[in-house]
Image 1 (tube, rainbow, N blue to C red):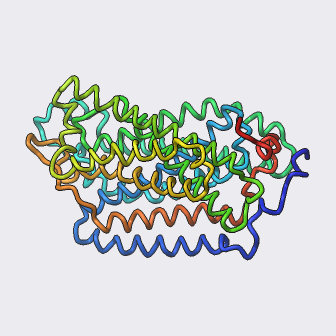
Image 2: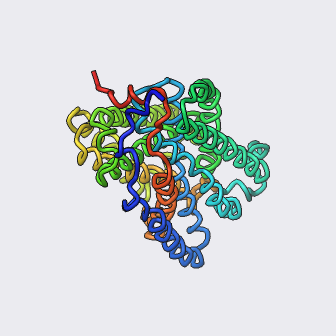
Length: 407
């Protein structure tokens, strides 16, 4: 096989590496955090389920961002990303975990989504009842997961299958099927964001909301992939395989999508502010009072200006410590963005005239549950890291990736 001569020892996780212990450690931590969250659930199930939805979407968004990264690399037939792509494949194939984690949301959906128990006389929701009803909601959710499971399973299986030998036909299949996969992914992610996030405020609507959510997902996915690579290199793995050239390109992607996220966020706000239609401005009115206005104003700096100027320099993107700090920051502000989307709906829903969101605050239980789900996610990914090839050694573009240099 052409790429066999380029396979080095640093492409494998040593048997005595800490990464072999990571799955059980992360799994136990995740279970303990979730058990602690259960105590808060008993005290206030309604509030606890909003925290559950927040944690679920936060971690799911990382897996979806990784899935898009895998698809788009095959669609563009990219060579530079081969040595970093397998981590993204591990992350996207955690989708069975999210099917299980979604079950509490499906069971307690009436406590989360206000449209599930509308009162007569609400003309707006009566007109939306053919779409916003619990039976159709569950069917759509099942379709989303079916699409993500199919994409994740097939791309992961086929990529890993390449490791067994020189299977050029697998590469051609990956390239060919990436086109329909990206269409299915875009549609499913968009409608999932409508159902699981936008419908929390069912009078409000935005046709650009799916793109807004997608931009955050991709940023979170790229940050996670980069942190995993940095963590592996800290353990002496991939030290010769992943270079500063790859980190620079990962940084460039995050920089570009930081600008893209800001552009979409501003476009959505500007159009609604200019039109000044009550059912459209409702979303922002809920987030410009009761303490949420400070979060809204802060996000201009935390989610755009700070990361924009931080990653503007080429040197930061090629500095491991600087890049690691930026990735941690990206994940934190992405989680803040999702908290800002979800939590103002608790107790207000945007149904009754004059309803107000609760005062802005962060509950410790929400953070503990987020840590728990994130730990389970890391346990799942690190399980594959410790047992599978962490580089697609059968990919015909591996040599190109190993010798990649930025112009």
